[in-house]
Length: 131
Image 1 (cartoon, rainbow, N blue to C red):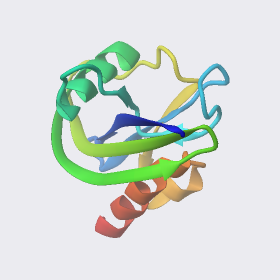
Image 2 (image 1 turned 30 degrees about the vertical axis):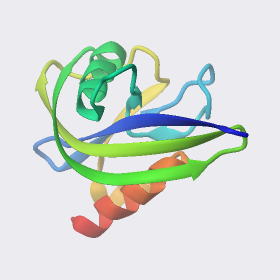
Image 3 (image 1 turned 45 degrees about the horizontal axis):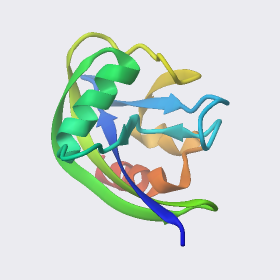
């Protein structure tokens, strides 16, 4: 029986309608895939609280979490991931990668040029369709 992990991802959009994307480092699970940054929901956190905490921990900035974009369950080789993604904006600070290999601001219509982790792809497709 595979373990199911409930995670959240922030789709952070700037004033230029670019989306903040992060490249998973070689030390992380699913290395070298791009993702919407976030992490696991812990204890009795709401998805929004978890997202704000994770972005503060991993990128040293504060975000405001908005509407939900997608809720995807994806079965990887060793684990099942439920990923909820939320549109977000930066309130304070400039995101600085503390754990990721690279970060990039990408226009919506160019998101598919990055190799996203499979669980992130439904959200990517939805963002491109929305424009």
